[in-house]
Amino acid sequence: MRRLLASLLFCLSLLSLSSCQAQFPTSGHGWMESDLRWLGDLKAPTPATDILAVYTHTTGLTVDIRVDLLDLTPADQVQYKLLLWDNCTFHATPFEVDLDADGSLHAGTAIPQGAPLIWPRVVRDYDLDTISFSLNRFLLGDHYHFKVITYLPGRPAPADQTGDIFSD
Image 1 (cartoon, rainbow, N blue to C red):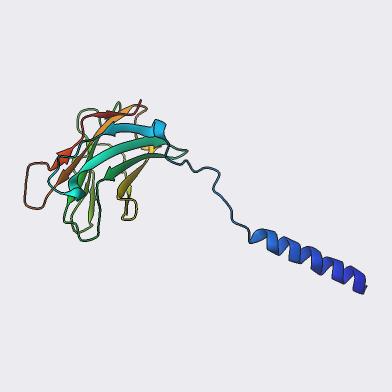
Image 2 (image 1 turned 60 degrees about the vertical axis):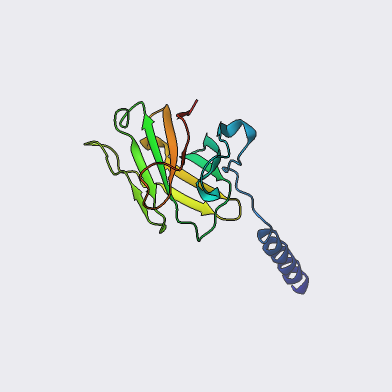
């Protein structure tokens, strides 16, 4: 009986150790060079408004857009805007995502009648100097194009902006 109990405890300890190992997500998609859609230049007035590159890819459930900036810190007073058009609901009027200088997020300011309610996920990564936008891909058309714009506070003219960036 003791031998059986010792064997059982040994097996349970092996199972508990295996559950402590790091688990890597299988559905995740890291950013790759082939995801690059736009390269900028260095002529914006501040590093936080200077868009260096834009990447996009589609994963299982989301359309992900990453904006690389020259520099991004919590103290930056910059507004970021994403305008997205697709081949369905947002073909005439873009879906808008505004990330204000105070960190507040406004999405879909001009949503057409009957359009789906889209809540984007926006992440500022100060270590990587990036802003990432994630949108539910099932609420967008198969083909989309978008533009990213940066603004300094109190100035209506863009500090920097991309051209039209296409999904394919």
